[in-house]
Structure formats: C-alpha cells, structure tokens
Image 1 (cartoon, helix red, strand yellow):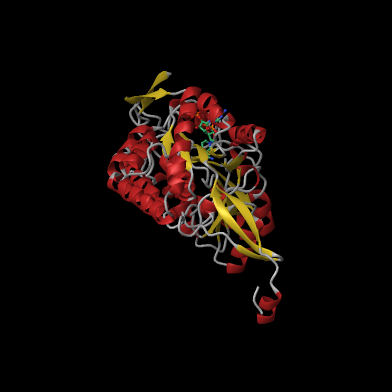
Image 2 (cartoon, helix red, strand yellow):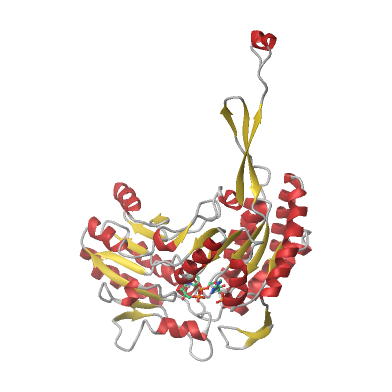
Length: 464
Ligand code: NDP
C-alpha cells in the first residue's frame, strides 16, 4: 500500500493523504460485494426503491460537505460543486423509480407461455476520471444499484475524496454494507485487477480513448460487459442566421466550464465566414468576462486545472508562437491556473485535432452548411456538439448530419439524467443515463413454460 498526498489545485497545499490499495483489496471488495448483492437483490423492489430514495436524501443532507471536498480536491468552483452534489441526488432519485419498473415481457409463442426477466449482472466495476468525480460515478452506480447489482468504484488517483465519502454515506443511509464500495488506487494496479477479475461482470469506464481501448481489450478476455465514455472534440457551429450576440456570449461557457476539463467541451468553434469577424469581436469581451479565480468564491465561474502534470499537457498546446487571438485572465501565484485561450490555427493543427481537456478553444471559418458538417465530422470523436441557427429546417438537417451522440441547438446542454448520454465513433460505446440505463446493468433471461395440450372438453369451451 502506498500513501499519497492529495493537492489542492488552487493553492498547491496538501489537502489530505490517501492510501492507494492493491489487487488484494479488489479481491476482498469483490467478495464483500457478492454477499451484499445477494441481500440487496433479495429485497422487494419497493424496498430497493426506498433504499435509493434514502441515499438520495442522505446525499442532499451532505451536499455542502461533498461540495467542499470537491472544491478542495478538484478545484471546482463552489457553485458548480454544489450543483454536482445535487445532481448525484437527482440521479439517485430518478433511478429510485426503476426497481419497481424493471418489468420483463410476455411474448406470444406456440405451445406455452414465454416471459423475460431482467436479472442483475451481479457486481459492477466503475472506473472514473478526475474531471467530474462524483457525478460520473453516480451515472454508473445509481442505475446499477437500481437494477439490483453491487458496485465497486475505482476513482481517479488525483480525485478520490467525494467518491469515498459517497460510499460512506450509502452505508450511513442504510444500504447493505459493501453494496457500494470504493477502492482507491492506481489505474495500472486496482483498475487492471478489476478488468481481470472473474467476479466482476461489467465495467463502466470513463476516461481517455487510449485507456478505453485497453479496457475493451482486457474485457474481451472474459467477455465482460462494458460501457465506455471516452474523449471528445466537439464542434460549436455558428451559422450567419443565428442570434450572433447570444452565440458569442455563451460560447466561452460551452468550452471553459470546469476549466475545459469536460469531455463534452465545445472545443472547436466553427463560424460561417460571412460573420466571422463580427463573431470574433463579440467573443473577445465574452472571454474576458469569464470569472477565473478562487473556487470558494460564489462568483467564480472557472477554477484551476486539476494538477501540475495536466497543466503542462494543456500548456503544450499554446507554445510561444501559437496563433493566439485573445485570452482571458487567471490569478497569479500558487495554483494550476490557465487563462481561457482562443486560438485561430490551421485546420490540421494538433490543437484542432487532439483533445486538449483545458480552457483552450480553436476558431475556424466555414463557407456553407455542407462545409460546416464536413469540418465538424472530421474527427475520430463524436460525443457532443452545438448548432446555432434561427432556421429550424437547418437545425434539424445539421443535427442529423453531425455524427455525435449529444447535440444541442441554440444551447450547450449535454447532460440531463433523464436523457441518454454517450458517444459515436471513438467517443465511446453504449449509453449512460436516460430511462433505459438500468437495462444496461441486467441480463435478459427468457423462460418458456410449456402448457399441456388442451383436453377435448376445454377445446370445446374455447379455453386452453
Ligand atoms: P485515463 O483514461 O488514463 O484515466 C481514467 C481512469 O482510468 C482513471 O481512474 C485511471 O486511473 C484509470 N486507468 C488508467 N489506466 C488504467 C488501466 N490500465 N486499467 C484500468 N484503469 C486505468 O485518463 P487520464 O487521467 O490519464 O487523462 C488523460 C487524458 O484523457 C486527458 O487529458 C483527457 O484528454 C482525457 N480524459 C477524458 C475524460 C472524459 O471524460 N472523456 C476524462 C479524463 C480524461 P489513474 O487515475 O490511477 O490513472
């Protein structure tokens, strides 16, 4: 076991230490999870629903503590961190309706009755990234628990605190001990042990496309079920017929929220050439207006990057000779601060092609609708995107033509717990959230019951 310091990204001070566990901790967690899962699955659907509602209420009661932990561990602005804790509560509340609604089907067949059951998979492993630690964990554990499974979460090394606390809250709220466990540790130790563990039936992974490919390969060894939520390089397409003031005012928030550490960040702004200059004039003050600063200040809109290592990665996309159009502000002194940055590079520049995962956006012009669609789709990713236009027909045409899982017209919304979320192409596999998510944590079992042939008397009465 190794003990590591967790660093506050806004101050570079040590927040606390955490023990990084090893393979034996995964073995132990899986054994405990199996015992807890049997107890959980044996409860009535109504009792499981009540358990999830109790957990939602407990998360609500601990909202401020969870938010403060996220501010200290991840550098998220306090207003955003409170929203994140509330979102976990809402996700749990939404899926608390599922245990009583996971009904199978009765299918007409010859010779008997056929019905399907939604059986839990058993133990589900969730591997989360550091950008939205508690919300992303909840997108996996809430529907997985609702479907009758036990869950083991491996949080990202840098940001485990809120996830650890959520598992404690689950036990305090009365869920069976061990039903929701957290095993902090390194990806190549704890993560690998989960991928290879025969007692884990499904892995939900969120993170980079590179690690996602590896997860898929390892899962294939035992045909583990997987859901992958991977990277993105989403386009924000601004047509000349849109409300340009609104498009420019909101564009910074479509990419710089969470300091750009967001798989749905609209990190490529595409602007119709005829309004390009005007859009840039409007964008400059909007970028300057993003309030970057102390995460504990309620007015702060953007905090620091998560770590020094990540800061260095982001900074590599803005070398001294980078085509910087303009930049916002950021505090000086300790902390992993990076100002919102707008680049106007060539279309094949690495800043346009690669996921930067920081507050850096590129702006490119396009000529017409076909050109916009071609540029938007010229990426291996396909997670999200925005389309700004006042022409409803165009909005629908372009929404259908952009190869991405989550599109919004005249807004930058991507994630609602009640609607499905996930990526096309190398942005992922499967969908999270929405009404069907619990089905992704079940195995469909089909049962046929032969019904004996009708007696002659029954046949005469028309019964069988
Ligand atoms: P990773 O994909 O490496 O990490 C995501 C999670 O996977 C972490 O919990 C990590 O653990 C774990 N992990 C790493 N290696 C393995 C493994 N071999 N087996 C099982 N689990 C593993 O992302 P990074 O944190 O390295 O970020 C790199 C880049 O990925 C970012 O700059 C960004 O571009 C992208 N990214 C995208 C995210 C998204 O939401 N789509 C989220 C995070 C990153 P550990 O923390 O110990 O490394």
